[in-house]
Every structure is written in structure tokens, then in C-alpha cells.
Amino acid sequence: ARRHRERSIEKGLTSYDLTNAESVHAKEIEPFEPSRTFIRHISPEVLTVNFEVALYNDVVLLLDYTKENSMAVEIHHPTLNAMMTQLFEAMWGQATPLEIIKD
Image (cartoon, rainbow, N blue to C red; front, side, top):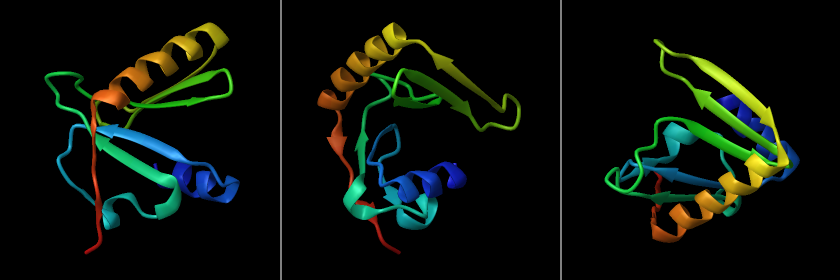
């Protein structure tokens, strides 16, 4: 995850993250660019976040960092990317902004 964040900063990308966490501490997501990092809380009753999903170009990237199931799958499919983007935007609209807590 750290390497992904470093590369995103290098490329000047903006991240929009959904989480079931009710707070986020800066030290947990470093490095990050505050002006390009947006995080929202979504209730697990609405959506349980089990994977990190990255949507870019025509790609859907699924990442699982748990020790039992560590994996990454990158799917190049424009139609799937469009559908996942619509789903993300619908969930993003229901989520509440989280402030990144600086410790």
C-alpha cells in the first residue's frame, strides 16, 4: 500500500477512499498528499469494505493485504471499469467525509 501511495504522489494523482473505519490517522496512511487525499466513512451495513479497489484508465485493481489471502488482481476491461466507477460514485455519495487526524 505504501508503494502504491508513493507512486500516486509522484504522478500527482488524487485518491478517493471509502472505509468502514470511523477515524483515520495520518501515520497509518503515510505518505500522502493532503490536498489530493479524500477519505469517506461508509457504514458496513451499506458496504463492507473487504478489498482495496483502484479504478484507473480501463483497469479495475483488487488488492487484499490480509496474510491469509494476500493477492492482487488487475483486470483490463473498459465496461467493468465503467460499472465499478458508477458503483463507487453511488457509495461515495452515501458516505461521510473523514478528517485525517494528525498525531
